[in-house]
Image (cartoon, rainbow, N blue to C red):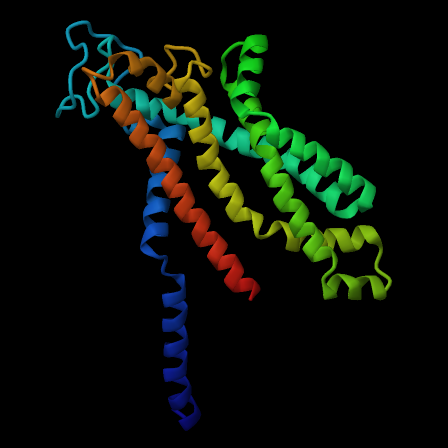
Length: 290
């Protein structure tokens, strides 16, 4: 072994150690990923987490508190609440992802148009966003429920339209910041076309910080949809969607607390885990940018 190899090996070990430390996630992000993995499994393959039927009634087991047999208790029809929470994950995640996707799609169009369209276009879109900001999400949901009836699609559209203006403002600010940056001006000076500059420089750098926002938006959309469902504006029973479970259990809240607490814990756990992962992504992206 040469003297060079002898000195290079410790440096290699130290480099690998630093890489291993960099790959370790903080505890909140790790817990968040584990919780998200559980909910994804519940949405994709709920039969792996429970063998019971979410719609099977048992009139001899009505409003039983949490126990070894029924982890989350039972509802007013004797249905196992844990099973219903597990099977309701798919619809709740669908609402969160669908509403966030719809909101980001609308916000992307409006934000990019406002950031690149000039003073007149920017002014018109900003006035429109201010109108949307003043339009209550609850009133919008009532309008959609009245026209189309309560459903998953109604909640997705109502929550998506209600949250789109905030995302549009953020995208507009990112596009404006990137548009006037030095590397974009240098690309223009080198003769690159507007479309090339937009595709290779503006969009990637403007959208990168929004990855964390999308993660946060999924949990926020589920909370919004659950709140609307609690007011009777969500999916109709006997659906196992989490907001519908909250709506169905509010009449028994004084004698069966688990009907509200257990679905509420699931909603809070998903929202907090998405927030923890989103904040970690945001910190990582900011560190990489720096």
